[in-house]
Amino acid sequence: MKVIVSSRVAKEYGARIRRAVPRVRLAVPEVRDGAVAWTADPAGADACCFSEDLWQEEEQRRLVLPHLFRIQGLRWLHTFSAGVDAPVFQVLLDRGVILTNSSGATAKPIAQYVIAMMLHRAKRIAELGEQQRRREWRELPADELTGRTAGIVGTGAIGGEVARLAKAFGMHVIGARRSERRARWVDEQVTPKQLPRLLSRSDYVVLACPLTKETEGMIGERELRAMKPTATLINIARGRVVQEDALVRALREGWIAGACLDVFATEPLPEDSELWSMPNVVVTPHNSGFSPLNMDRAMALFLDNLERFAADRPLRNRVRSTG
Image 1 (cartoon, rainbow, N blue to C red):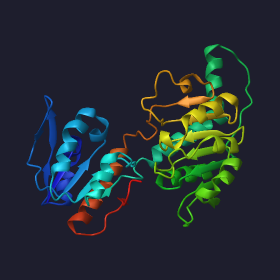
Image 2 (cartoon, rainbow, N blue to C red):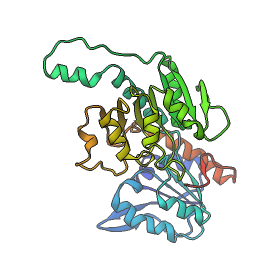
Image 3 (cartoon, one colour):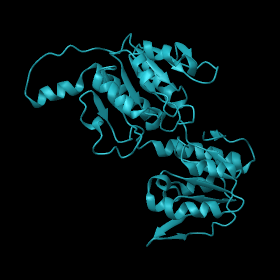
Image 4 (cartoon, rainbow, N blue to C red):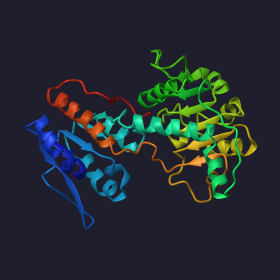
C-alpha cells in the first residue's frame, strides 16, 4: 500500500504509521525552490493524509494539490481539518474518492474557548482590564453561568463538548440539530425549523454547525432580532453562517449585547471592518481550536482508519457530501 503524507506527518508520525501497517510505503512531497520533489513516486497511491499545512500554506496548495488530482486510482483522502467546505473536497468526492475528516480532534480546545468567552462576558473581564490600565479601583457587578441558558446550534463533536462543559457550570442547554437522535448533555432539543425558540431563550447562542447550503447566511436580521437584548453570540463555526452586515448593525443598535467571533466571512478580517473597534465584540484570529494536543488526537483517528482501510473495513468520520 502506498500512502501520500505531508512532510510534517512523515517526520513526526512515520514510524507509528509503519508500525500500524508494516507494508505501507510513504510518498512525501517536499517543496523546494518553487517546485515539488517527492521522496517516492506518488503514482498509484492508494491513500493520502495531510495535516493542516496543505490547506493553510498557499505554496503547498498551489504546488501539491494538482498532483493529487492527477493520481489515478486514489481511493481515500484523510484531512486533519474538521471543516470540509473547501471546493477541492467536493471535487475529490465527485471522483469517487473516500473522504474522512478529523472531526472531534479539536472539540476540547474549541469548547474551552467557548466557555472562556462566556466567562469573559459574565465576569466583565474586558472592563476590569480597562479599569486596571486606568488604575481605577471600582467594583463592577458581574454575573455567573449557573442557571443561564446556552443555545448550541449544531451538537456534533464540538457542540456536544460545549454542552458537556456548560452542564458542568450548571447551565441549561438547548441544542439544535438536524438528526432526531437526542444529543447527550442537552436538556432540550429543537430542529432547525424551531431555531427561533432557541434564539429567544438563550443567554449565549453558540454557533457550532458546519457550513452548508442550509447554514450559509442562517443568522441574519430576523434571527438576531429574535435573540435577547442581553444575549451574546459566539461563533466558532464558519463566518459565512452569519450575515455580517446584519450582525454589525445588531451590535451597533443593541439588538444583542455582544459577540465573540473566531471566524469571519473574509479572513483575515479586513482592517476597515467595524468589528475590530466595537467595545462589545471580541475578535480572535480563527485559532479557537489551537492546541499542542490536536495533532496526536487527529493522528490516532488516522491510524485507526489506516488499519481499517488496509483490512477493507468501514472508516470512521466518513464525509458523504460537503454541501
